Length: 144
Image 1: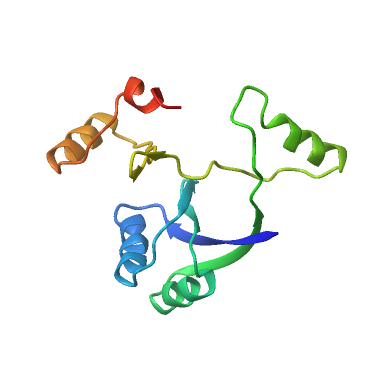
Image 2 (image 1 turned 90 degrees about the vertical axis):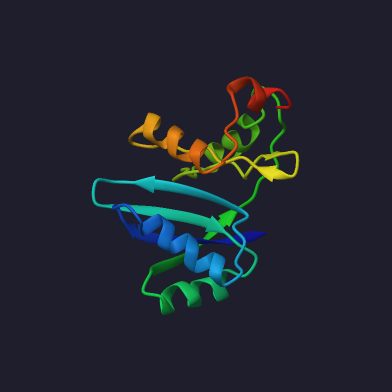
């Protein structure tokens, strides 16, 4: 079964990621999981949502460049080497993995987002000041 993913192309400048996320939030679109990759000039926000066609339409109406991509969601055993059965099957079929990312992990009733910032200390202070709960490594891994 294929699952459609939205690839949203963003200029790699402050506020552009926020604008895309705000557009979806304002339209009531919940992000089930996401991945953000960057180059020097642009980023690609990859998201899975319940209604990809509807989200694509809303984003395009708001000036975003969006592409739909077919993805596969593979169930992988949560143990060392669990991913190997998937990778081995693809390798044997001479299939290359372009990229992959894990579906959002949940901690209690909240998803956990891993964020890489260009200025980690400034980001930490800004998030703390905004009342965002930041997890320690121990807290993050205690149920994993």
